[in-house]
Length: 58
Image (tube, rainbow, N blue to C red):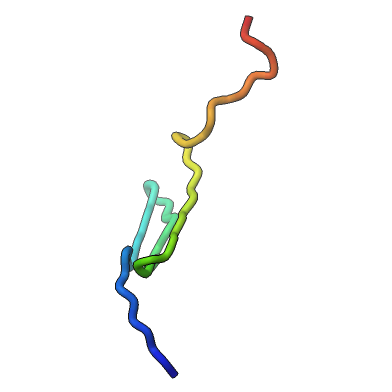
């Protein structure tokens, strides 16, 4: 068996996120090797597009 070691571009362990008493992430580990493409998509209230209108406002 061959073991390859890669240098990490991103490394995080034990990530935790809470909003008040509500824990939404607990103990997330992340390791992204150098030379790879990584994407994370999170939709937040700030990232929402403005509401569309079906007719002009006039």
